[in-house]
Image (cartoon, rainbow, N blue to C red; front, side):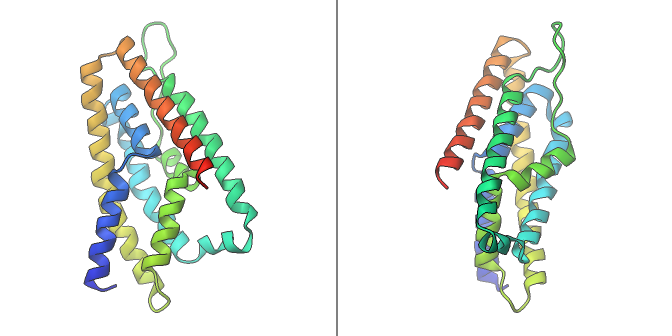
Length: 199
């Protein structure tokens, strides 16, 4: 991978990692509800989970959608279902107290696994694989792409988690936080619907 390609890939990685999407919505809500420290496993799950997925897809796994086209439809519906479930979970998230059962942030493994049903992650992984991974050195290029996205993802996941934490401090633990989480849940549900309809 030459320098120009690396610069282009880095720009794409930072833009894709920082722009709003399912991961950023969930991180902002988690930061607001649980704080930065408790959101770290979720953030690291995304930071490491997507680059691993990207490398696997870039090395040929994405070709399975050309061989079995119905699989893309199945994955889209699974992703839609998971995102709607997560939207419901976010909308009802509470840090605990008040006689309510406390919610929990996503774990490292849950956040990593979510990347495999996240339509935005699939689109990015297939796009990057097609544009930047060539037949002459696919493993090396996939490792470089994974490292670039891991670095970009680390900055974005921490940034969105801290943004959510700052919002949480402003909102407090009462009705304003509940309204914020309901809005984040609706936003994630809207993302799910939009991604399904835009296929």
